[in-house]
Length: 160
Image (tube, rainbow, N blue to C red; front, side, top):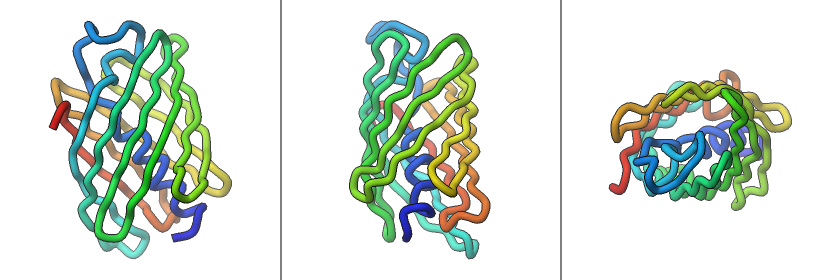
């Protein structure tokens, strides 16, 4: 997988780690996304085939920022992601990196309670993200038409 096509997957995974947690452990608008999370889902590639993916993430919130570190693996993909995200009112922005392939990018979007909608970009690749949290579950849908990885859907839970 080349770096540009992998970027869509990396962007996706960097946002997969958002999930609700008790606000007692951190303060700020991103506090409910902090914690340790794991789950699985499906990657669909350009030709329409798909496979299962498993992810683990540890997220730390402080004030208006969120730092995350995530590892995801499937039969064909293995990657390590980091991201720094900041909230200002209803807006979120930040950067991400996929360290094993040296891919970096930016993201921007909106946060409304437990919902984030964002656009993540790197050179030549754009991904649309929809993230919805409900209770201890997080549902993520990412679409990057035309990329080698065209869609990712993952559900994660706290502390599993």
